[in-house]
Length: 595
Picture 1 (cartoon, rainbow, N blue to C red):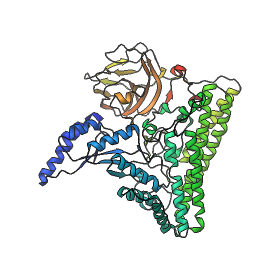
Picture 2: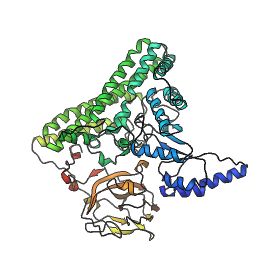
Picture 3: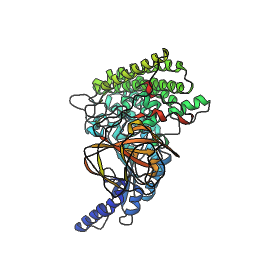
Picture 4: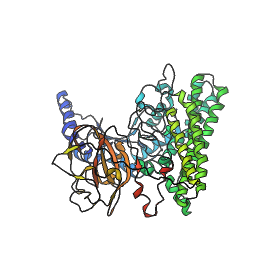
């Protein structure tokens, strides 16, 4: 099994499989005297899978494919839209299409095991034509250990037994009677905890809690990828201004039922238009109620538990933590709703109401911190800078709730300061003084692209008369590289030191017109509404780390431009260029209320 795009540029996938992988397999078969082709499994992640299959199938017939089921989280029992289309294409063009249940970024670190959720997912596998399953554990990057702060450490195969058992049972056969399945799983719980009553109540707790995190993430989250840790919360700008944080659109267009995002919901409220599908407020309210019932069911099992009482207590704590997390989000989402309403009518009463709700969310997160903080070694198993939501991650950066709580307290304090300024009619600076970004020098080789100075009046693209009419002050004077949108090409350049490359793309359309795949999560948003030019939407700037020395970049054909290079260790918080925001009658950007 291989991923052709993670370490290579996506356009090399077809070349790599046809000129390296398949010849290598055939050489091995010849050496062994074997004529039957073993399966080659190709992951559709971070590669141009259409080009790969077109090139590979004439050379090798036994190719299976793998694609992530609801991204790197678990969000639904089904898929639709572009995700469904991709699975159908893979099912039609490969021997076996395999669904990869990947990382579970929205579930960890808590126990999760809703058997009927899993059964429904597997029945949809059958309907779509998916013939294989690849399941990750709930804490992949710490395998085989669970995240619980115990001595000795708990093994995931024991702690999360129902996770593995349910996927295995329904991968074998999902077409089973739900009532009989309920009895089966209740009996399995009873075996572990001593009595039938304990089994029934604990199964009820797991089943009620099961949909809470999966349903909530698509309505309010930024991504189903590992870039977001749902258990660690979200900031107010992430809730009211998701576009700033490079949202993965398939989170709600493919990996969730039809429904609304928070901005859509508020806009329809203001316009008195009917809502459609699931709504952020509705789902959040239902998650609070379901998690409350789950906690009560788990607590009600106490008199009937006669075995493994230590694990039972940990289950109760997890159910309590999930309920507190849902309460935190419920209060914060409703605070965000009020802030967005203020953007339409500028009635400060909305902000007063938001203040109380935001304070409530901080209280709930403090309770969550006091409960889950001591119970877990870390909240997530992936401690790298790849994680950006709610805050930039790393081995010593925000690994747990304890490190997040002061940030949410600071956010509340900043909001109260802004609110006080509004109340006293004192002026509020809605944007900080922009500082020109420091540059890393580069040498462009002559194969493709041309170097230019980023400034007003400069041509934005090569072989084009489109000029920059306005730009974020931070970018003025940067040395960049422009390329022809129609021709594309591979840029070759040398960097004087480790750096971050800054690339401007035209809105979300760039994701369709270039080989860039945001699902790889290798790019971080830096600046929205950064470049203005005639007849194109305002450009967003993304950053990606690159090493010193020789580098190459090929993003295919499309409207993008390299806007410069900055030091690798320079942290620039993602932000909006306010000078270009609020056009076309859109509500103003309100992130400044919290930053």
